[in-house]
Image: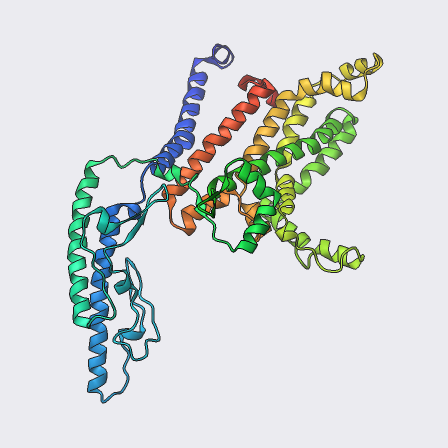
Length: 461
């Protein structure tokens, strides 16, 4: 801080500090606070009051559909048996579900989903996987609309259920208003085991796979009561982090010699052309580059055309189903974020040190180990951190390249929670937990590399 004041004066320094504080508050802290607030809030549809309200709505809709069905039958009888449109063959929407048509033939009434859902013994699945029921939990009488009963009896039962459910919903809303709205249940879904139904033959094949054996060793896949359970959320999270680490390692192996060649092993006039050759392909928009890869790896794409045309394979290879394809494209997409920081730091190294080490008889590997790598360590750290964070949060590459034919990455899981299943509270919990975990991995990496934040300034110097 004193150095900033001496260099820029108190006015500019104060403006700089204020800009940093505003940036941190508006673009970092505020979004994460909003995400944490949503992650700690239970979804409204998961509240018991919402379940009771849904039951009341279904019961009232059941009565409306039954009335419409009776009216259509009366109209058909008055028309001398001429069929007229009625609700008996139409789906009637409601908050609790959708009525679906059924070929009931000569039944007293068609199948109506809302009437089938008008049952006080409604299941409520808790975060720990335990199933409870509304009637036993809140001491309601066991009532249900049976299609075998007369229509008037069905309507009377539905009306009674609606009255009980509405009263219960009002009482639960009052109780929930006095309780804290925050809960850790959304985070618990990340580690919640899910039953995986499978036939004995399929189970034998699954158990023989090495990946499933590894998941069993770390507790992400296990057997309970003769059934296979898997922690799907943690499996996806672990797989994504492993891929991100491998992407970072491969990018480092590729970029280190490139950065060394351009920065130290090439005359300056030739290094410019090498650098331009490296940068120009990345002037194209990222999505365009990713979609270009689809034309390469497609079933009828360039790569398969070469393989089949040369006789190396008889049938096109399904690259879209191979995890290695997504892995390769992710490396290609973010490789510049590795090479630039390393090149930037290596270019500040005095080449005379390398020549002196060679004159003293040091081998190439020792020159890199004792001179180049220690000097380039800040650039390596920045490149690894940037590549890892980008790979861990990759969304467009796995979604476009795999086209749903491979196991999804954790970023896709978060997207699905927000926009596909409309469960943004759980999605927020996944997102916040993932962010903290990635930060923890970065912190461990910095500790192993013995790199401090101020060392990163060398990357820009």
